Image (cartoon, rainbow, N blue to C red; front, side):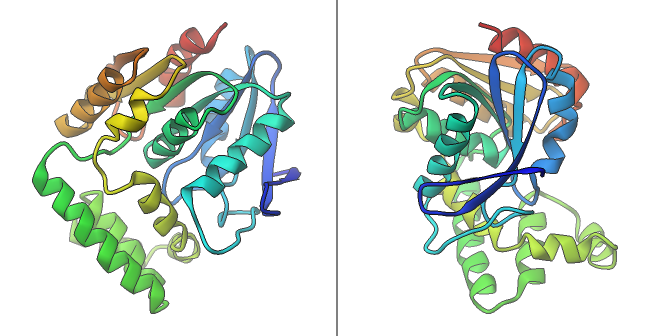
Length: 259
């Protein structure tokens, strides 16, 4: 990230911009930095002024305690000012949950798009999320970053054999470095249920997208987001999963985000 700005609480935010046109800010999900959004930024840069950034406590950005979702909304407000005072937002997975909170807060936004925010759609999933929060909080408090990452991977449905393999991979130290941010994403998810009261207060158009090859509960959650937003639209992408191809997603976003 080649540029820096400060959030309201003084936290340093690292970001980079590419392209020209209407302003679009991309928000990454859990266990990721802004670098994961670069391929999508490149795919949109021929039509938009695109900003990607490291969320607080990740990559080259700083952090300050105590954490609150409102601080991350303030981060987005600071970055929108960098882009001229108004922008559209796109967020993937739990980054989408942050985008929806930001839209409900009254930030100067034109449009909002999210991809597969992993909200729970049944009671058993809600219980699983509660247990995850308790175990994650304990692991991070005790400095067991590796165990925290394991908990997250298990929550996503990754097989135990693959988790054991991940621990032996060269990527593991980087994953452990991001472990504290898992608590931030967990807070943004707010217990995991679809926040219908939050969504009902959003006054800008909302596009909720899912891949038709993803698990059915993710598609159901995406439909629920669109249904709860006053100006919500639901779209599916053929053959896509939670690891969506930027080249497939970009045209859909461009169509929706173009003024």
